[in-house]
Length: 155
Image (tube, rainbow, N blue to C red; front, side):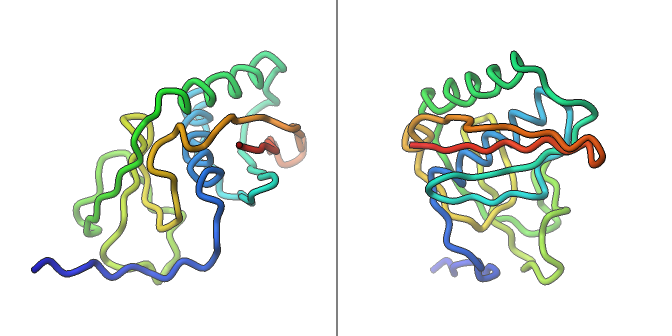
């Protein structure tokens, strides 16, 4: 009889469609701009905001391209799957820099089709079609911090 892995408690209630969209958006930004995944996000049912460290502000055309790519990914109905691994068996490309210091030895890896993979204990939809439509409400740029914020909603 296989024992259920022991993971850290999750400290917040998330809206699964928006949280899953966050994963897709992170990977889209990494691929489009060569940046890191966001380290600062506030994901909720009504609207979500997420920040990225970039060298320069994206153009209006690039912002439209982000929204278009997100909706293409959602329409592909990519499966969201999980696997449990120990720290010495982390899949290639998975970074652990966002994990808390007290993270368990066993980690849950979340895969969205073959598009994204990361360690996460949050709640997700079963497939991307459940996200609905992705819409960028607004964006802003902080020149001093070189930080680009996207405010979005799903549904």
